[in-house]
Image 1: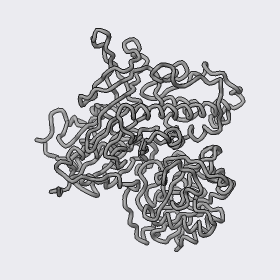
Image 2: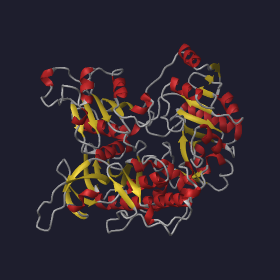
Image 3: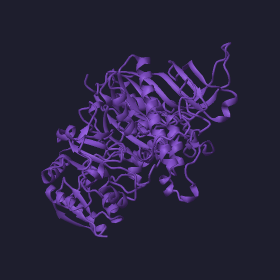
Image 4: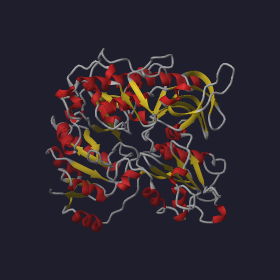
Length: 611
């Protein structure tokens, strides 16, 4: 069927991964996190990103607003009674300004609020981008939507409802829009203990009337347990990637209590991990026999040198990934479907993603891990879910080909490049890939800016910092320049044709989205020490010329010069900052650190900043 008109749908995600996804006739026009534009890490309220919609269309068919909560009225616009997103869209003309279309409660017929189905939106994003016609989705997240939960007593009488938060969910997914809950773990605040007890196998009903198996508990979920360890190591709860980097420095420690499996529901040990929903969780240090005197290491930075922190990071990584394996098996058993899609915050755990391949290798399970597994992906899922409801009227869209370069197009003129460079006292010169490789092999860091920015947190060659992976001191050098901790590992981008000679992909053909930390083949570690972590793994990105022509050619030039088909790749940002988005962001970042070079392969230009 041919579309009679263009259908524009925008998905808006509130919260710490605030983002906007714009669809035209079901295809992604752009998907961007607010922080990339506002330049403030974890920035919420994505009005800057919403303004970008006006560069593509002045009219939306639907504005889809999603978050973990349902009520938008806590952020009302003055006098009109609208939530601020509806008001913003009306004032800019993205939705109708006609007062006759507004309801007395401030709602608008073009605005859809999807506040109760946070985990379902994660599932929709992963399912529609996986390419599967049917699948089962496994969502593991910190604190999803707030739900009113209550256990039925033996007489069938309802007990008082209390608030609970989604932690782990399983969904059956069938194209185009049949996504229904099969299982959910809902965690309640400790104050609810007087009215809600742990429950297993009870039949609950989702907002769309489907019954599902539900477990209610007052324990921390899998992600909250990981967050508790992260906080115990001295970081913010949501900086779990640092804990993942620290884990291989630890070891099995018999003094650490078992984190999971303390009831038949595989819930966490509440005596050791104390939840504080919805914000975080804490380690009960009194339940742990410390192996070192903490007074010897008083600073937050030095906590990572303590054996107890390292060992606890090891425990939470290895035990949590085993819990997900059990959850995947449960999903397959409940659904009868061996196509598994994974999303939610834990989906970014590339160590665990690789573990599943080994643990499930003989069970015929096909796994797709969504690269935009953080909450930014819910704006994509929300917009796609609404469009799929319209596909009886409009064309079917294959969103599995959307890829990850979903930012904005930038077409700078030579004059604009020169003017931006001059703002930061930088110089512009002509350069080739070979010129850049000479800089890199001479132990210079070269940043790379090209094309559309990457969706999700991984740098995939469009907003990347490049270095020589063969430098034994490379990891310490680049971590110092980027103001990152000593234990943080780096990724590598490798030519697709060479990947199996260098790395064990455990049956995968490729790894284009950098979602797996894989083992290197024997003899490889000493060849590329700068990007091999202490456990012998590397988070890799495979690259073909069709996927990214300029980046492929750069890696090929590095191989021609050195014999090594892989280049050191890390995200183009400094510690604690968002990835760069614009050319101005890129040059300004160089002006504030010790990186001198910025390469623009599309223009054949090298920008040099001398600090």
